[in-house]
Image (tube, rainbow, N blue to C red; front, top):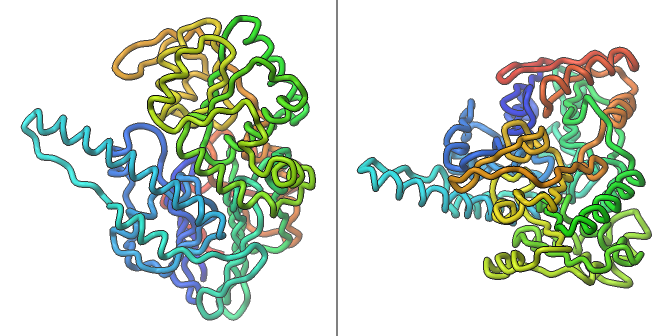
Length: 467
């Protein structure tokens, strides 16, 4: 009997980790994500594996976002030494993201130990090292979309395009169990079909068990035409107020999407007078990876814009300035009107965006524009929920800025698209919802039951399903 045990993203959004066990697959985890938000030292220390890392035969990674990949170095440090199957584009992004995450973790640890030393207390050791990050990359095995890869006798994995970020995959594991062939399908994170830079998520027809994300299980996004109209209105309103726009953006996916659409506005003459700054070293590096892979997209217009005329997303937006050094970042504060700042982190949990907020969030002419999901407990979520005051850098700041959300830029499928994707399976498989807040999961489960007669389980952390 095959089993799947849920060790993360179970009745929550972050920390994806699901353990598949059967006689032919061995012990395989689908994703190895960290919980996001808060101090990195506390977060990584708190995230414990409920299995022996050395007992695992393989990792299958759906995509590079840290809530799906961030604990891979810790897994390696505790004895994992097997293959990590992912797409080649995911491996390209993973190198950037894990190195950046380790740098932040190491700096947080240095600050924590300095505080402990001042108090005469014992210092704390890193849970993993740069060598562990490097080893993760050496274990990665690139697999093409739609090309089955056998990882044990009688067991194979196939990646299908999830349309979420570059390299993101729907995972299909096919294996022999109890004398018959079984299919496990794990959606990873399903993309928004309105995303210009991504293909639509692939639809599969056969499975015995489907693990499906449910981030936006309780609502739909605005369509892209309405979203772009809203963006134009927000820019016009902010300009008339004599203000600037701060965009907290995820380095992977959302940054590249907003750069593309700002480029379109620029070429339509609707961005005249604005200065655009990309103030995220990681997002700059990721954007160069996107340029490498965009030629593989199905969208002819994207290929024409990024390869023939301009060759890169950066060149497509002529008013864009790249900020790498802290000095270049700080110089943005000299501009008081007509500035669009794109900076991480996407949920305002760290990064350069917080420094820009320090200078502008208390100004009524400022607009903060959120273009991605804000998890519970993050500063970004507090702002979206209407916080009137926030704390950063040990100080309290009044929130006078206008807070806006562009739902159409989400990298996740909305409720209707999730239902449509689930209904594509033709053999009535079992369904389990993962990667969603409880209320969103419950709403989606109800809709699937009512509209498609699909019954879903909502597994809690540590719960196991046999199939």
